[in-house]
Length: 80
Image (cartoon, rainbow, N blue to C red; front, side):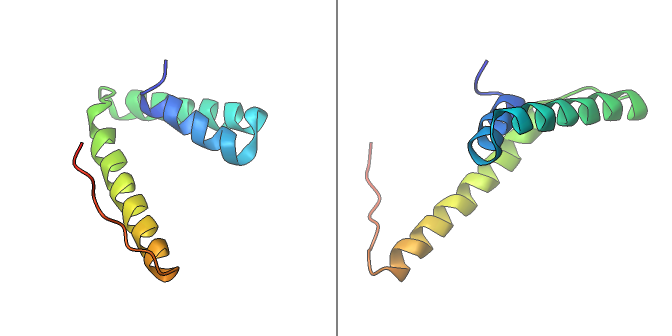
């Protein structure tokens, strides 16, 4: 199922490292999540990862704007 943090992590890693390493990295991340839930007796909450994803998206946009300015382009926002 796409759209959850683990799936997004898998697809990003697969693009950079390949499918086999992405599977291992995702499995490790899942095991660390399970360990932390059991160790600290907390609940897994996907909503706290949404703020992290938004921050990463903002940084990505700033980087794209910076790169465009570096090459002499000016980005103009479009209203959808």
